[in-house]
Length: 201
Ligand code: GTP
Ligand code: MG
Image (cartoon, helix red, strand yellow):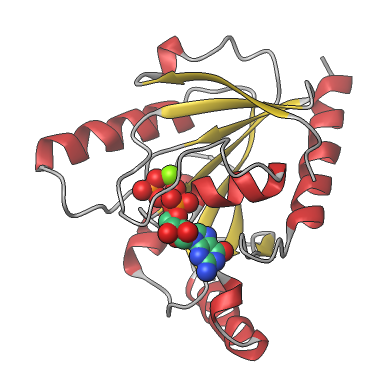
């Protein structure tokens, strides 16, 4: 797990985010998919990022420090129906502005609800990432809610559906914030990538 994580800042615009001196990893996905919960699980701290049963909880670009070695960024969800069109478009601009303007962004974890068949909204989003050269890693969430074989089935369906987008299948993790599934694998991945980034500085 991440031994020590602390909140740094919240911003509505990438231009106000911290100077990109540290490697960072962003967490994105549909509202309520479990982004903030996953961050808390990785850090073993339920009070780090704000979570909620209601979609639309995270509304800003939130930076957290992980062990002084890398940053984690909690983003608002996409595809949240219950806000006005203008707010939705502001959020979209904020997210897309952030994702395309951070030279220190090593990877964006795109969270996918492991209970669902491939969703067009998620496929559209990862297509946008591919077109904009935003490097992604998939994280399937809420794996505690269904059987291992059902999770496997939905993961393969999603990978098949995203086949047309990528030449090489993206790296992925299966996670559960309830059971800490995927924690060590994800933290190890971030630690390794961050070390490489810091060594090249
Ligand atoms: P927004 O900030 O609104 O975009 O949502 P989010 O993606 O950050 O989701 P959040 O972490 O707030 O979690 C949404 C709901 O899903 C909460 O009720 C969580 O308790 C629940 N949840 C998140 N991860 C898991 C998980 O791995 N297992 C289970 N069973 N529930 C989860
Ligand atoms: Mg959130």
